Amino acid sequence: MTVVTRLVTYTDLDADATSARQLSVSARLEAVLADGGTVVLLDDRGWSASGPPGVASMSSVEDIDATARMVVGPDEPFDGMTQEQMAAGHWGHLAGILGERGADVSAQELARLPHDVVLSDRLRAWIG
Picture (cartoon, rainbow, N blue to C red):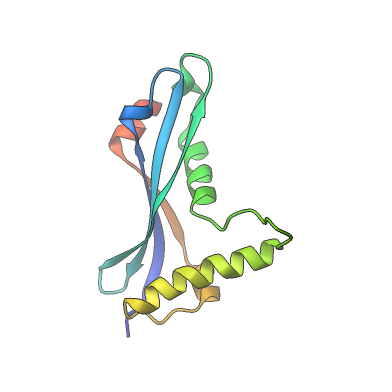
């Protein structure tokens, strides 16, 4: 049985969509396995923020960390769903992906795992 030890969200600067007035970041959520392997759980997330010239000076590692955790879910409720229902669906979906890869982890266990956010060197340099 494969054991999941933690979650990691990797963030990177989308250089093609970033300028002095706009920041664009991609985010990829992975599960880290006890054997050192990883499983990509989400690779289609990210965000953009715009502002006056020099928007980089208004961004921080802490802001990127908080936003990255938010964009990899769970999402905000919609269509009359509660936050608890959204969270259960999100973590259940991710646990299902891991189950297909041989990891036996419940949605509740997955939600409680340590979750790190890693900023790429390119993103750190842009923030300054």
